[in-house]
Image 1 (tube, helix red, strand yellow):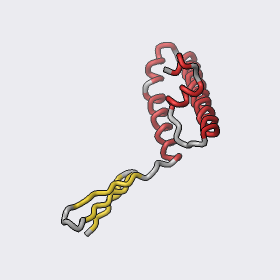
Image 2: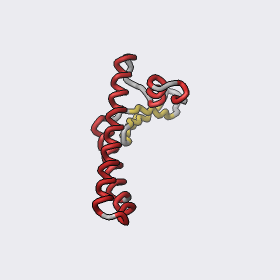
Image 3: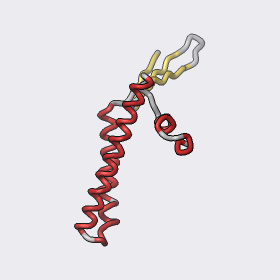
Image 4: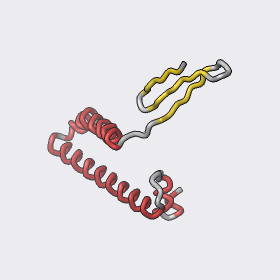
Length: 114
């Protein structure tokens, strides 16, 4: 007898082995780009809408709005620079899985990369 369960982003399969014991097999499905985008956007929007306006309210509407717009521009540029660095490194190495540590080590001087 076999039983299959779907749990979030994984597929779990329970099967009876010939010796009478039950074995579980867990197979992870890769995430989607849309799911990752929604997760990042939800986290960013939630933090920005709830926390930042309350923290910057004493400075006034104009100054707090300007500060939030500058912070947004800085974070957007940082994300785009990181994406460009990742794409360039993927083209150099031919690999798709590149971590931040490898990006830092390949693009910064040895003293800054540690």
